[in-house]
Image (cartoon, rainbow, N blue to C red; front, side, top):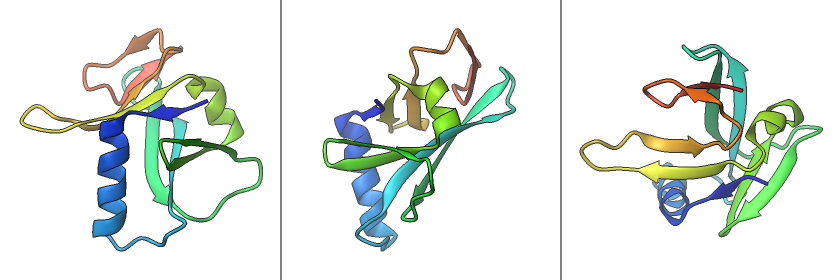
Length: 108
């Protein structure tokens, strides 16, 4: 399962509303090759499910992930950090053995 913190939920709902996204909008997360640690996180808003998607709902937010990415993201918690030193959405991934300094890439 992939979960969200209250702050991630609140910020995602605000962005969906501010950008006039459709009511069926969800957060699509994934992993792709690249970054200084080997794998990079992806996050975007979407409203078109794809065949084979893994679908989760936590705190009223739907989170969708392709099967391959889910192998790397199982147990991950999506967090949001704002403020002066905030980085936006962050992935707290228990499967990552190493992360880069900016937190946008990892290795297993």
